[in-house]
Image 1 (tube, helix red, strand yellow):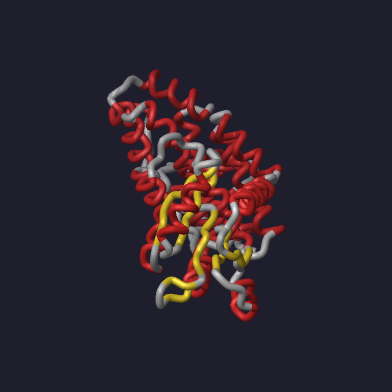
Image 2 (cartoon, helix red, strand yellow):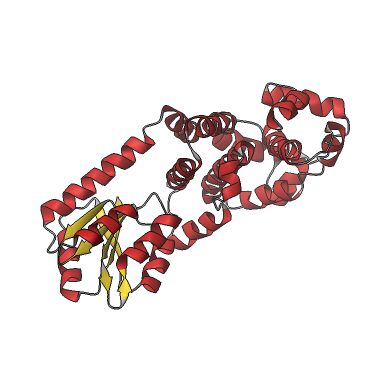
Length: 334
């Protein structure tokens, strides 16, 4: 489904535009804004894939508004609408990253041609074998594989993408990953978008980008699992709040109010790993954060995360990460 936002003050054009969209069930008009304030609010809440904006909004400049939107949401396809041809405005529109300068009235064939082009472009952006692999691990409910593939995705983003494209790719991934959670409404999507904001630090540090990916993937898993078993929310919350302590299966069973066996079966079904595996992976991600972002030594990190012996922590780290903590620390701090 392609979500479209119209920014235009002409009531007659609004009606005609809405009527045209009714002929294609694969796209929908998520809102009509008449000024920049309404437009920016709707972009934030609706996250459209395409925006059609009149070049003049009363006393406001539609191009200036488009420029603001493009800076914040570079992945959105923006089209400027105008009643007349002005070469200077056309040049300015192209300079702001607008996809196309369109003349009113807009024909149905032109509109649906643009929708098709945009849909094909999004498909091409997503046609990355690494992305496909990540989506496949989620569909298979294999958390450890998702955890590992996230590292490959992060490495690719820092090998083949510049910073601007990296942010665009993360937005595409964010939208694609959260689309795997059925039934999320606009408020929930907005909450998740704010919770996992893509900051300049995330797109400039490979480890932070990888950590962001793992956290988003973890959120998708927990959302899907909690939709079926509401009491699992308490389990996930307890694990996140007690990463620095020893966590037992009995503790988690008590939090959920279910037997240890039943809890284990839920994890096997929705994560394809044991409860203990999941706890270790959540702790190890935190350990890697300490290694990447602080000067703490491995012994201090192991004790801080509830491991009674540094040797045992190193053994666990190598089992799940495929390398020693020292090797990881050398690489991540280069």
